[in-house]
Structures are given as C-alpha cells and as structure tokens.
Image (cartoon, rainbow, N blue to C red; front, side, top):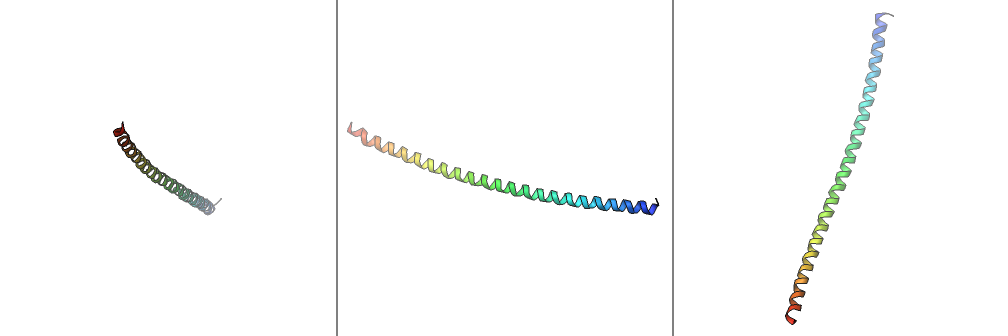
Length: 82
C-alpha cells in the first residue's frame, strides 16, 4: 500500500470519527435540554407546592385565631352567669 493510500485511508477514518463525535455531541445536547426541561418542570411543581403550603398555613392560622377568640368570648359570656 502506498503512502498516499495510507494517508487517504487515515483521512477517511478521521472523517468518520468526526461524524461520530458530531452525532454524539448532538445526542448529548438533546439529553441536556431534556434534563433541563425536566428540572424546570419539577422546580415549578415544587414552587407551586410551597405556595399552596404557605396558603394553607395562613388559613389554618386564621382559623386557630378565630377559634381562640370564640373560646375567649364564650368563656367570658358563660363565666359571669355562674
């Protein structure tokens, strides 16, 4: 095999390897984008859950305060008549 043939064969192999690298990089980019999208969706769900939790905590706090006032008023109304 001549030197020229060896060089041409190596160029062909290099070209094929470059194509493979390009395809692998494209797959990696796609996988990265998909995983970033998944992370964004999970973060959004977490944010929504935290918001809902805080909203419910405020509701419970208001209900507890209302019940405490109701009990205090009821005790005050019942106590004088005894």
